[in-house]
Image 1 (cartoon, one colour):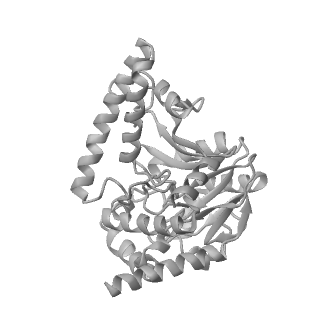
Image 2: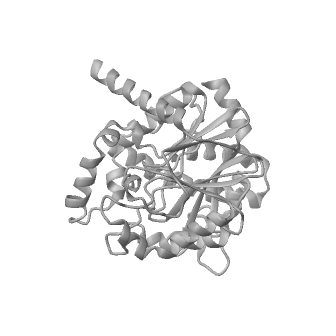
Length: 371
């Protein structure tokens, strides 16, 4: 018990030091910021985890976020420097680095270092940002959004990241083991999230992390979110038109199937469905997910006083958010739940959908009342 208490105390001290040393940036209602993390850029070979989503992300950056005047926060593990050299990454993804420089010419690019690109501190090269950061604090009035990669909440990655790098470079890389299973190990993922949640709740702040590759919104897992959505649709069902009822029936059917799949997966992995076993979850933890998902990529958007978890996907790999897809949720249902439908990026097979969205003022009010 004393050993566990010592570890918890050490991690809390690490996070507090990180928080206090973070540069601050005021956040205005007119600002547009997108938080992306965990690209794990490689050399373009079959071992490059980013390769399947490389075109998707570049189209999204070039044709949606750049012309829209968005600033970028790249929240760690952008380059996979534990497997590849920076030179080989820059050669393969030169077009992506050009895009990052284009953002610097307009709004801004904030580069936060993670555990897989920690070697950037020693490279001394421009990598598409004016400077490297360990973390960033966004000030929304008197409230704070604390953006950092998240590996600092795990004692192993904080103290022994070189050991992890040795394993990835000399064992996992040679055996063609991708990054996804390594990060999705359930016990480590839960422990990281739990520690960041406790730190954030105690200080009544919002923390936005990456690292675990699991999207989170208001401290809720996808299982929790699906439960709330099913409950809300059941409440709406008696009051809507027959046509809307049929749409709700289709949506609920798809949600139930997905909920069953996730529930069984969590039981196999030994992960609790509720993240923190609290009567009321404090909405203080957000996670941008990753850019190497099987169906696409996720991101956190902050714009017009709101924060949203969004999913960009290729319809050739996933059609669950498109209208009229059997057994899947139609775009009209997404729109009724979140105010946004499956928006098509013209001239491509790519789509954007808002998984969840809320006002920052409302989120911070709940934190003050519940934490």
